[in-house]
Image (cartoon, rainbow, N blue to C red; front, top):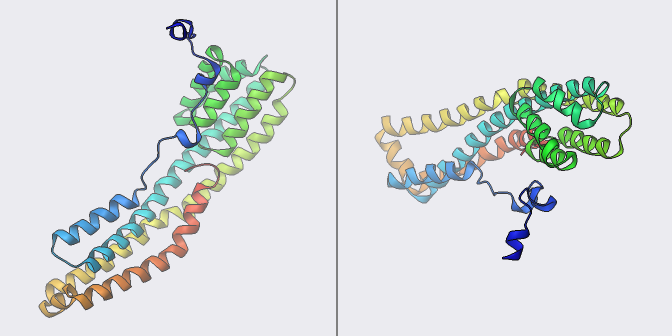
Length: 257
């Protein structure tokens, strides 16, 4: 009872910190539900386990390709938002008295998810302090540059001094990151739906051949047909992995998960 009565109404520094690490909610990869759904459809149709496995593999390839496209769009949005925030913050850092003042002036000039995180940081600077506000900003924005920017804001608030030059360096890095994200999206990510479409067309041709030719359909529905389809799906997955795995690693570079 004493602990409840004496607990600060605004919380403690430990309770106000952003929750990161193992306590973050685990996310189920989109590939798992897609594979389960495709395999379940084959099972409902009365086909063998080999057909279900082949369908699941193809579903994983298609979902992974589309996932790269979605993650790339998010990466571009975050990178452009961080670059914009770094630019306006660099301008405000030259005239603002404190780091919190610079954040408060720069936050309204940024839109999107990064703008919302910047506005929340400006509010947190007044209520819980600059260091915790910067930590929360880094937790809200999945970007390595945003993390560096948050560290700079926290250090500048504690030590004072001229920090506009350092923000200008981070502005250049953020602009380069945004340009790289846009280039990756234009050259690689936009081609991912084509890969998924090729896999779907291949599966559609096999299913169409089985429907048109009764003998072919009966053979494909048998054990040998299931083995052939599963082997073909494995080959498709192996060839697609040479494109998908580097693309996923590239789109996750910089902090986006």
